[in-house]
Image 1 (cartoon, rainbow, N blue to C red):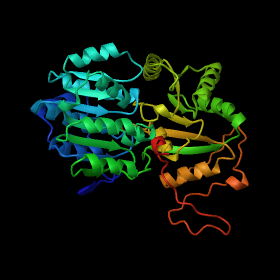
Image 2: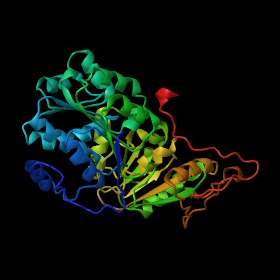
Image 3: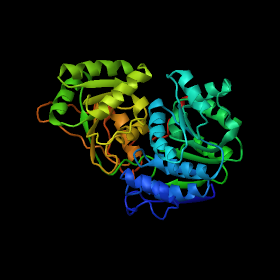
Image 4: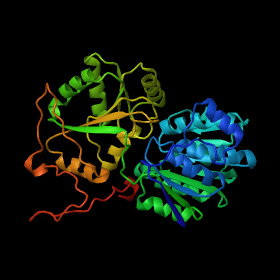
Length: 420
């Protein structure tokens, strides 16, 4: 990359959307939507994207990345022929991108199409026959349409890879490579990601033209408005602690389970406690997942239980509490999970449950976020400690040499499944 623009997310002054090169009509739409303050990623990415530059944007979830590419995409498509293509890792994220982009596109008479797996093909084929100017898709479903000649990639003039690291982590690397090979070389490409693993660098080097890197917060940085705490508790006591916490907190709760089987059990337990709850994971159909998400947004369900398929796909303002009922398998997912709260300038809180044998998992999280997770004790609940072999040493920026007999291993980002 030929240039890096680094902005500290915590000291960037608030600014509005004026002066970024945005067309007056789009500014009016943003004003009607009550978008008054541009986020740091928007301040840096939008002017470059409007100029037609290739961009690699590194920013955490909840920082306004969608409009960082949606605004320039719609504005540039007004000026030139062709299609804007957005690839997203999950159905939920694709739907949310479509909803955000459609508001802007329809104001200029442009149609959008959302191509996602788990939904019938026929309505998507009809949407493609209406000549949409913006297509949002998950990689697998887009290839399905390409193989049936429903979507012709030679018209793409702008490409966005959103949550690129998540797509690689979910094993979409072969599909992304296949799609990129069929797209015209003369196009603008924007890649947005929360982290910057080597595979992302390879894509940028191979398929982008002198991309500008816009980094808002270092990899592993958690949102400044999220407070965090940790409870060390035996596995069999988690349900009882959850009951106490749901009585203590009164707002909406997003709860993460490591497995879909456990998610179903947790939902049943929460309902037995007298709270409304639903679940979202890969075993649920698209209509069931959509109903659960809409019910959570509307308040029909107070608690939404999710696996990591939803850790970046849920864009709901006003989530009071995120509970990691199970610690994530990968430390990076901790950042993505707790990023579901404290969105759009609001404050939020994240609580994690760790069993006594998970000291090493907590240590990995602390190394990634460069902070110590404060351990709490509930006034009505007896809690445990990490076992001696699992003691979690607090994160120290200038950590000294390991004690005698210990081997200090550097933390490595987990490789995407495709590369394992």
